[in-house]
Length: 155
Image (cartoon, rainbow, N blue to C red; front, side):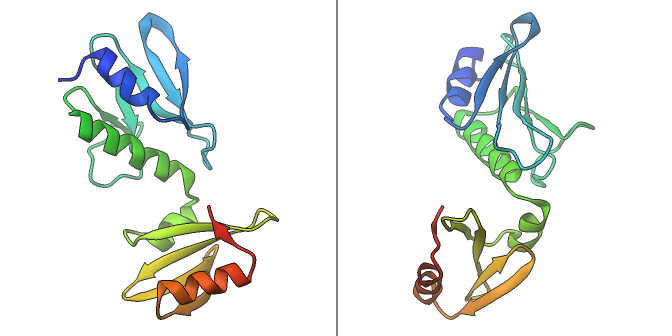
């Protein structure tokens, strides 16, 4: 089992998380860019080594009624992985999560703040604007060229 200090160092290594000290020596880490009301990624990391990571949308983990995964016995790699997945789950809208499922995907943004999602689905590259399919391409290069022509850059 990792110590409190080791778990703390891992959580602090994610620059997108903000540390929040709470009662009894416990520490939370918030993801302020969350697209949902949920902000806690690491919750009640305790000096005894216990703690939780938000995993409501992570089907590969057992969660409690609050959507939290107990990380008491996690290894360093397991803890880094679940924190990364938790942040990613909180950075997607429900619509985006429904579109990309387990497919590789990239976000592309333009100067006006619009976002498109490029998803590799079944040997094709699809561009989505929200839930709407914007284009389908045979290769990543074709899709990237289209996105560049439309004024989008990888986010």
